[in-house]
Image 1 (cartoon, helix red, strand yellow):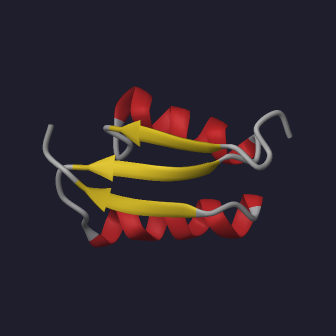
Image 2: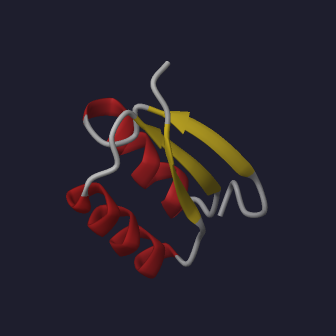
Length: 65
Protein backbone atom coordinates (compact mmCIF):
# COMPACT_ATOMS: atom_id res chain seq x y z
CA UNK A 1 0.00 0.00 0.00
CA UNK A 2 2.49 2.56 -1.21
CA UNK A 3 -0.10 5.29 -1.78
CA UNK A 4 -2.47 4.78 1.14
CA UNK A 5 -4.06 8.09 2.23
CA UNK A 6 -2.81 9.85 -0.93
CA UNK A 7 -5.07 11.50 -3.50
CA UNK A 8 -4.34 11.48 -7.24
CA UNK A 9 -5.86 13.31 -10.20
CA UNK A 10 -5.62 11.06 -13.25
CA UNK A 11 -6.64 12.20 -16.74
CA UNK A 12 -7.60 9.83 -19.55
CA UNK A 13 -8.42 7.06 -17.11
CA UNK A 14 -10.97 5.10 -19.15
CA UNK A 15 -8.69 3.42 -21.72
CA UNK A 16 -5.14 2.50 -22.60
CA UNK A 17 -2.31 3.54 -20.32
CA UNK A 18 -4.60 5.70 -18.17
CA UNK A 19 -6.85 2.73 -17.42
CA UNK A 20 -3.83 0.63 -16.42
CA UNK A 21 -2.52 3.41 -14.21
CA UNK A 22 -5.94 3.69 -12.55
CA UNK A 23 -5.76 0.00 -11.67
CA UNK A 24 -2.20 0.31 -10.31
CA UNK A 25 -3.08 3.39 -8.23
CA UNK A 26 -6.13 1.59 -6.82
CA UNK A 27 -4.10 -1.52 -6.03
CA UNK A 28 -1.64 0.65 -4.10
CA UNK A 29 -4.35 2.34 -2.02
CA UNK A 30 -4.62 5.78 -3.62
CA UNK A 31 -7.89 7.69 -3.76
CA UNK A 32 -8.36 8.82 -7.36
CA UNK A 33 -10.19 11.58 -9.19
CA UNK A 34 -10.60 9.68 -12.49
CA UNK A 35 -10.99 12.24 -15.27
CA UNK A 36 -12.57 11.28 -18.61
CA UNK A 37 -14.23 13.10 -21.51
CA UNK A 38 -17.45 11.12 -21.24
CA UNK A 39 -18.64 9.09 -18.29
CA UNK A 40 -20.43 6.00 -19.59
CA UNK A 41 -21.90 2.92 -17.95
CA UNK A 42 -18.91 0.74 -18.87
CA UNK A 43 -16.53 3.14 -17.09
CA UNK A 44 -18.75 3.37 -14.02
CA UNK A 45 -18.94 -0.42 -13.83
CA UNK A 46 -15.14 -0.64 -14.09
CA UNK A 47 -14.50 1.84 -11.27
CA UNK A 48 -17.09 0.15 -9.04
CA UNK A 49 -15.26 -3.13 -9.59
CA UNK A 50 -11.94 -1.51 -8.64
CA UNK A 51 -13.46 0.15 -5.57
CA UNK A 52 -14.88 -3.16 -4.37
CA UNK A 53 -11.61 -5.01 -4.99
CA UNK A 54 -9.19 -2.53 -3.43
CA UNK A 55 -11.39 -0.58 -0.97
CA UNK A 56 -10.25 2.82 -2.21
CA UNK A 57 -12.28 5.81 -3.38
CA UNK A 58 -12.54 6.58 -7.10
CA UNK A 59 -14.46 9.68 -8.10
CA UNK A 60 -15.35 10.00 -11.79
CA UNK A 61 -14.89 13.50 -13.20
CA UNK A 62 -16.12 14.51 -16.65
CA UNK A 63 -13.65 16.97 -18.16
CA UNK A 64 -12.34 17.78 -21.63
CA UNK A 65 -8.81 19.12 -21.52
